[in-house]
Image (cartoon, rainbow, N blue to C red; front, top):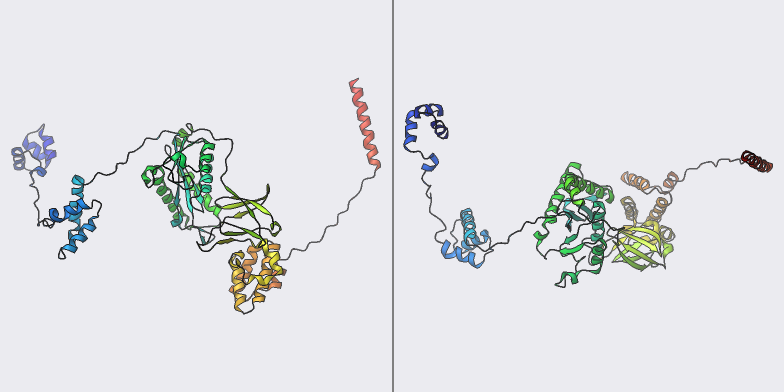
Length: 500
């Protein structure tokens, strides 16, 4: 009909009907009534009676007014409780009717006010749980979070793998890594009510800042702000970015084919690569915002906590319910320990003495152990039977093969031999620096159903014998030095003659 009406502007009804593809009779019928076919249809009447008529005004509306937040399924359950014969297939009808009623009579809803962000003004920080990604390090599940920083204008982002939750150390380290990777500082830093940054006690945010967080903000010249507690959408510029980043990581992991990484550093490099790709897509906006950023200070500020802890006769120290071993020569000394999110840096005075992996308590009732067998193997070698009931025995074994060997030997009923052989193999692994190769040899023997031969393993991993080369040193005669002196005198006279 639309085609007919178009032709009808310039042609007769007969010609327009022929071009539109219908008869002259249809053309004359259209001429008599120019309404479109859709305009001629009568509204469809109800095909069945309204099942909600007996209940709507008498029961449903009073429920909606008394409990505005009630779900539709809650209303339906209450109706069926009152009227057991009510057919449950009225749910969709009830949902449509309640949604329409709420649109006209329901309570006012909160309104999201979209903000316009200017370049260089706002940077946002938050933590997000990424344990559901199922990451494993050398076969062991990694329980971790991501510290996530983002610029509101350009979308520049930085992510840092965090092992210990929302601590000030993780916040300080992640934020500073982000700022130095960015190359500038925004004027304002916003987070939610992190206990690492706010005491969450005073109403005045300026009085509520922790001293460490205030010092961190002062060092970089950023104004600290936070969104209202429990109002996540006020931090929406980063809350929504959490989901996008985790979905990007999930896609990359699916393409990678495995979620197991050989080390924590390898996983961190993987996260950096994904974040770098996302930033590359925003290169123009990031370059524009960099021009509005304040310059970085001359150096970083403290991103660790520091404790002074004595080393006990157990060959280590306890920090936050975790026992750490250190070289036994440090027993009786007090170490200055810098506490980072993933590591401890130990100093004797100002001299660094080692870096330890950061440990976590097993539970609220049980502490943790971070043990390096190299620290205690010399003493354990003198007292091998101490291995039987050692508190941190399971953590002492550097690889599963050593633990498996010890348990297999104990199954044969000789604890003394089990301790002696296991300790000697650990000492061999330490002295010959063959921990991985020795573990593989032990596992191969156990898989074959036999016990490893200690003497054969010592012979296999003994140092290579090499003959000492004969070095002949020929001494120069002393009169050679007299010749050197005469050459110097002749050279000096030649220079004087040339000058004359």
